[in-house]
Length: 241
Length: 218
Figure: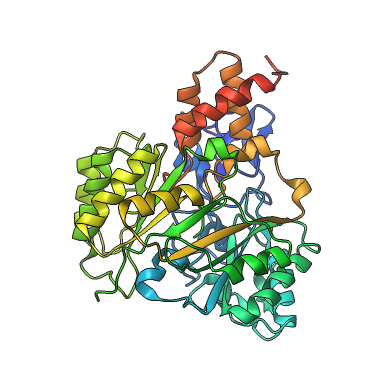
């Protein structure tokens, strides 16, 4: 994002809206630190500027800066990079798609969340750790998948690595037996990254919203407590196409 | 996206915080989904969400968009419109699920909330949930995170576009009497492009959080 200095009146109203604190005063006017800005577009979307001085960066749809927008602006589609969305429908439509069956689990590593964002160098640390441990079941319809230069090593495309994103999701679907390895890898690589990620797991339910006991046992054994609130697919979807 | 999964807060606070998604599945029930999504949204409006947004207009409940405009945009929009909403009331969630079950449009419905509460509601309504997504917490360099009381607000937008500084700004304005808890909460909901920032919960959080802060700049 940019703030046109010929229009800005220096009211500072836009500054608190920036999720990463990229807007500050330079003299009497607000300005955007282009290194910090993730191109999420929040400052523009909330229409807080009284003189319409906030505009998109001229290169926001050009690679590699476009990476920032497409991984940080929740309203954007990945047209410039050919990458689709941050994540997939995963558990949300599992009743209709059957993407993850009773003997499988889905695991998501949501890098940069909450709040901090993450460099793609950090994302690569995670993707390399997964590859080192033989975890290559990265969801193919996820934008992270198309960022891989070498799926066997987990290396991402080098021309992307200087970029930062507000969030990106590494989605993995594995047989239950392999879930422990994925979780352990995530715990290990957490010690290496400078940013943060949230970890989550999804699986099909037993009757009466009963979580599979082996899932709970696995999480207890791995020292991964789960939050009391969860996201639950209510089982009302079905395939009709 | 798992952006309603990691909402933080005390159990008492989360008792009044539910998200409901209406979500067509690409390649499985996208075709002609406009009419079925619209029917579900009509039921949603009938119950009365605390906030909502759909992917056609991307306008939340407080952006002066009318239900007619939203429904019209769904009917005339491309197939696959997704709808996100929040509720504070357990009774409303139950009423909504009864309506959605009876309407039986075949579109996936997600509910985010306390597991035991959703389990009870599902049993009362006669639904058999299919899949659960569990949050296993924050990992990595967590020292860099804003404090937990601020994260109660910011994690209501899972895409992280409600900034910690905006929360502090809201606290400061309420503390100085420049705005009300309600107006500050509506302002906090503005950046959330999915309409799942719950301003009713935010009001309660502000009422408990504001007294614990000292305003340093007048």
